[in-house]
Length: 201
Length: 76
Image (cartoon, rainbow over all chains, first blue to last red; front, side, top):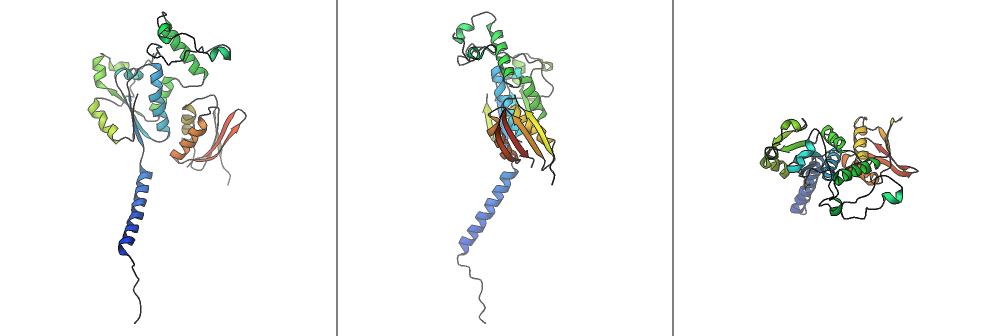
């Protein structure tokens, strides 16, 4: 009989190839099943600093990501039922001061005065806040309460810092009921550990 | 095959609203249906591309029109 057995030239190489292929398939399947996640720590309560967490969170949620925002210190103001956020030119030297109304050549110009000097004018902060809100409205930028609502709709988890409430003697009734939980750092960190993206705002 | 075409007018809206509105509109569609989006935000060109590649929807066309941008997206 002269039948020949299948020739295995190099069993080790064949096994390695087979393993590599299986490994790539398994990894690709795992990647495809993975839901990306993001945690954001929001620490500022001014109008300008309210935008980054809510914009990033709502957009990530639209992309299908799992998102949590941990609100601590002044960031907790972003969870108040009545949002009364202000923007201050003080300590904000890069903030452009532009008039929201008027001809294009005026709107495009910065008011030629350092923001630190402007802040000394009584009522300036209120005016700056009004100007920024008007400009945002003109440019079709969502209001914070709208963005927050979209985050809630998209199932973004809003987590509030328990210590901050105690620190500033806030009443929990001042805050929106959609807050998922009131926790401390030790409860939030494990969530951040598992997230693909962690941001501090 | 006749395709149902849905439209979304996102003109005048700025980042991230065109994406959020698109996501909302597309959620209401059945798989394979097409959403046509018009937008004026120049950032929406790249953002909607990224939205599609992340979510698996298919960007059929993305073009500049007289008053902004026009996109055709097929729901995955």
